Image (cartoon, rainbow, N blue to C red; front, side, top):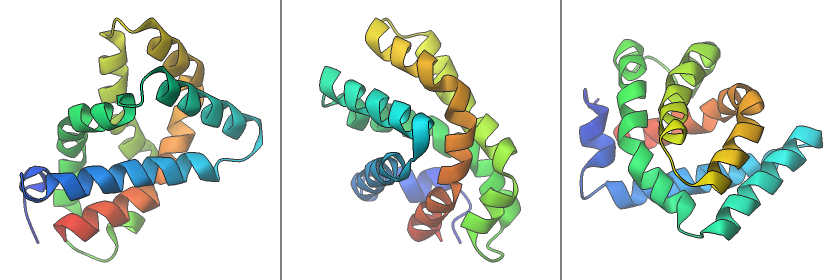
Length: 146
């Protein structure tokens, strides 16, 4: 098991595959959403992609190092025992809070008002959506770092 997630996920030889898997994870999570909040999320996601097709890949590239930093303590505590997806899911709110600090700080500093408006409209449901994505996130991390 790799102790430092940054080595396992952000190395030049691994980063392109990780970035592609993260984008696929986001697309799958958005696609799976149901109900009124799902429609809002799908609409917001589509709007962001329409504003700039490179926004999502660029955001992944720009935010992934910070997300990896936030996941690192959970990875260390997990220590390879069982499924990392199960580990993250059992600590859902704590993990989601850690990850959302990254996007909250980034959005607070952006000058892109359209992106900020969409984010602000979806932020109240973000915790739930991040928690729901943790099984896929755990599998992704374990696939590349385990």
